[in-house]
Amino acid sequence: MIRKYTVYLFVMLVICGCSEQNSQTKLVFEPSYNGQAIACNNTINHQNNEWSVNQLQFFISQIQLQNKQGTWQNMSLAKTAKQTEKIALIGSTCQKTEFEQWQLIFNNVFDITDFQALRFSLGVPFEQNHVNPLEQPSPLNDSAMFWVWQTGHKFLRLELSSGADNWLFHLGSTGCRSQSVMRAPREACLYPNFFQFELPLDDSNTIGFELSKLIDGLELTMETSCQSEHDNLACQTLFSRLNESGEQAVFRVPVND
Image (cartoon, rainbow, N blue to C red; front, side, top):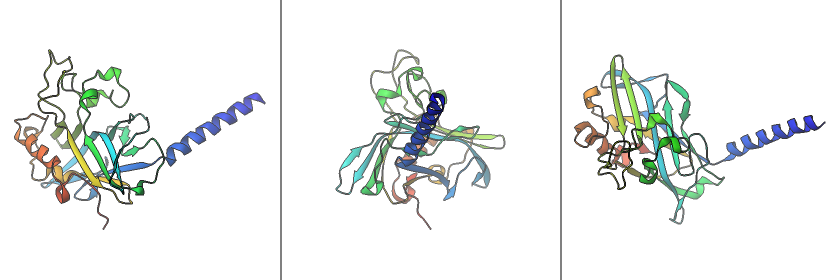
């Protein structure tokens, strides 16, 4: 009898836990190229070449929502394998589909239609960016999204391939000064490459990532790949694209046709 009760209690706890997670308020990120959804099993046509998206992942932090009265509120996230309370790793690695995460899960349940705008940063704040990843919670311990202590995390990792050709964009802080690459800097990096975004919200609870706006006009080769070097012309173009707003914005509220 005791054993049956224990099994019953365990099942109920699992059900309640799943129900609670399903009821939590979420925001979904949707990647696209020229309005067409990006997935691991399809390709994009860029400058008459077919490209596969092998990896698209990015950290977002400093998440705020603005209510209808115009007040901004700091938002807390549910702790998961892809989120701390303040930082989330969004995106997917096509070779490892278990790393896929395209939604923000907030720590509590609320009516998101009570809010009119979203504000967030693309990157990891300085205080967490240069900490030993082995001492950090998931997802900040993901070695694939980390350079070294001196430079810290890759804020965005985008990797494309077309046959034998490859192109990549790794966004992160550069110009970071410390005694060695294995030491964290004490002061902010010369080029933080930390971008902030503010978007209106609609009833779809969806934020788009429009890849075509990021790489428009770029010839994708290893020579135009970017590891966030300040003097790299391709990097300068990509940085400027992340600063665009309105119809040219990379992050946007999707338009329903």
